[in-house]
Image (cartoon, rainbow over all chains, first blue to last red; front, side):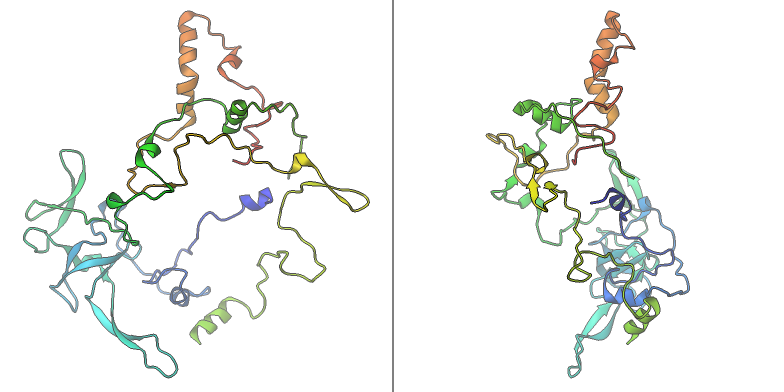
Length: 216
Length: 135
């Protein structure tokens, strides 16, 4: 491909400065309806929370502090860091019809609305009451969440993969390299490039040189 | 209806002018390639003569006793080796040699070629800058 074409390719998807993030992913039709190319909406103000201070993760048990389902505890299903939102499983729901066609009224389902981080509180695993949580370091140097009321550690929820694979229970297939072979250190540092080393190994001799070319 | 209105506001009714003009568009007689490198020479009698040196060949070493396979097991933990940096490469390959020569007293800063210093990339098959290999 032309070199100048490669150099001008965008590295990653760019969003405009006043892009309004919703609950749908940016490439879906619903997100495109929310952000048509010429729109100008009132800006959404979000509380700036630093990356290191983020305390709520997917799979955590949290309690709702305000709203329709105040006082109920639920598991976090999805986290939206750009809007400080959290969606809990089956809580804070409203009802809507899905899959509506011309003649079918659609299925009536309960869909969860997002909750702000302000209206959520992490639950202490020992006494199951809402607490304030702080990030502290253990003696080993691990960063953990500590509940301020009881002083106990709130463990981070185990990350479950969407494809259901549990890495520790994985059985290697015929095309899988075993962990020992992968982690074996066989690299000997040298100043030769890979191509020069392969040529040396196979005994290929190339006395010809390329003609000088120019590109603009 | 709402989506259509939004599209009308964004894209003016008509074709997408900023789309890339590939060989799939244009008339039957419009000829355009996709950037493939030529593998020969077109002579004056419009005959294509393939040049063997321009056809890429795969150089594959003998894979007897090679333990690595296409995929990596999920059980593998994250590696702990630090990434290879130019400073790291220098300190592992060249620095011990220079240290030894300096202690012996035979270090000469005008004779850096023996440690692997290349003053120009002219005359090399694989130049580092401008990089003339695809990897």
